[in-house]
Image (cartoon, rainbow, N blue to C red; front, side, top):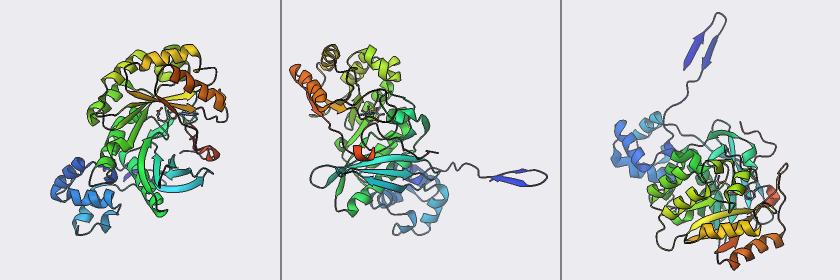
Length: 363
Ligand code: SAH
């Protein structure tokens, strides 16, 4: 505690807690910490399994004895709670997660086939990228989430999904924020989520979506050998159009993005995912689609067409279903593999690009 003495009163300000967040420690980092505090790395797997595999609080992990108190002293255990939830008619559920400091982010649970559920997770409170078609972009960035705060969202989602007898199968970093603008936390969270003593998600069941931070795309490729699914939010075929809707496009052009994608290792039958928000009159013309087809040439990828989801004040309109299928037909004509991701969760503003915490200040 830092205290400042004045004549009349003593102002006591809590010092920032610089201890590492226990849930954000990868297994090697946990081993190093346990060595440092004298507990010994031989306990790391058991602690990790307790925390991440069984989602137990530290004191409930069996047979830790006095070590539990030592570990508790050396770390923080930030809590993430589900503050509210809203279910859409299509079964999609939007969650508001509250961090220990009161910051809020949103997540979306999306039921897939056979009781399997996908979680759309947030990596930042708000976002600095300011893409013109994205509601989160209008908020600006408050802060990045720590790895432990990302992992804790997943823990909360696992519990919630299991309570209804389903299984959380996929994690997509497509909630609030740009995961590669905040890479170390994203990387550590992915490492923890994949750990076989932890939640043990398969690499191909984790997707990190980026607006195209090229150096970090390359870093991500190196760190995960291309095993964790990469999605690139491309949204245009030409630099002119991309720059008109994505400020970051001024920094990394289509050629640089294409080189990073061509260099991205793709084990087995893996493909890159290319996201393309359909903005009628902006990025759906013949010339644009020609350029997109050319850009994807020789790149093992699947173009995901996402109909633009409108939000209040958005400078674009939603495409009609016919306008979206027309883009699909244009791609088919050019032999570009694609699929259409019809929106889900619109009823609760939980669809792509609609996550902006209406009426709730993210503090
Ligand atoms: N920052 C990351 C991840 C968050 S957005 C990224 O840009 O990829 C997840 C996906 O939703 C991205 O492909 C994004 O471009 C798309 N998206 C954003 N706003 C949208 C909107 N209003 N309608 C449809 N998709 C949108």
